[in-house]
Image (cartoon, rainbow, N blue to C red; front, side, top):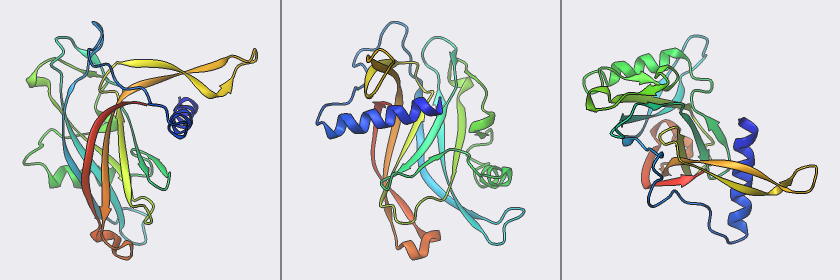
Length: 212
């Protein structure tokens, strides 16, 4: 799966360089396609010294509220990654101790009493408002030289598309197909001096659905 992901990224970069339009989600979904309703809070930072750390570390987190109004129970296998404009890619949860989630949960217990970490949010979203999920996604701090980031969240829809990878061929010389999934992309610019990283702010720029 990891290889497929990086193949997809490479393909989209090549498509962009060639001046072609990357695939977009369908305007009218197919009869078996679904997408859950998504609300989100802009990413926040938390500075925490966990067990084994010599000094506090900076983490970033995103809270998503997911409601299934698709008239069916849906499978939920999310994948989330942060990508900087310097092309650093960080999977959610990488090198994030459990204590970070506990501190975030305590911070937001009044508004989100049933907050769950992404890794323990289950593999289904049941129908209706009563089954709404509040999920937190956490990343360690990223490249201090970055000026913007994109957050990519998959698993919120089952819509997929197959495209030919312009950079890969099979043993017969045919283009290899790669599968892209409907993905929520959130874009932020970064404010503040890199020398004062703990005071940095993420400024909301854009939200869109892409095939990735």
